[in-house]
Image (cartoon, rainbow, N blue to C red; front, top):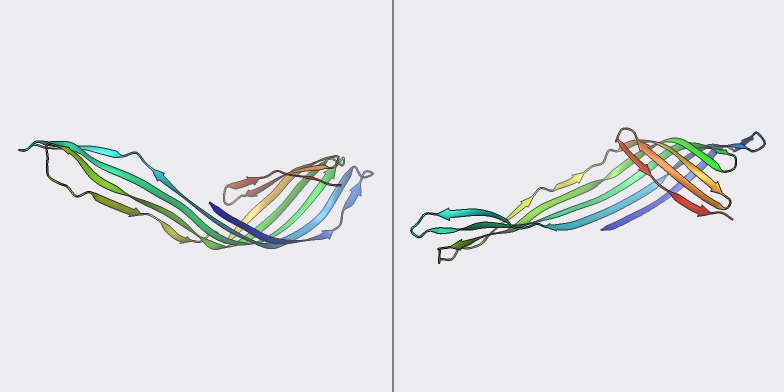
Length: 194
């Protein structure tokens, strides 16, 4: 497996932080963000399967019995190159200096392509009794790959999350929901601030 993720981002706070109730509640204002993200992923693996045997017989003379044997393997791979340009608007609220709640919406413009490789090949031969001649083994190859598939070029998302401030330790649990793709991403980040 090979993967690369490179990106750059920029954020601008349009409305600054405001405090309420002697600082017990802080509104972090409204932030706008954008950037550019390049993602490359390549995964390949081979599946070796057990041999498949099918009995065969021939009422001679001579009488021939045995098996037709298929020795298969599968090669599965995915290669993708995607370029994303995100735009988002977020806000957050801090309570009691210890909890942060985040909410935002965004849209990603996505370009690129994905190749899905699915190939199968193997040997075909016989194991016979009662036959003294020679039989040339066979082989097969099947290619069911799908090439150059384009992603959905617009992906809407809802962003939320919760954060915890414990002295100098900060822990965030961001959640990204893609409502039109039936997908959700959850992460955990931790850091120390001094």
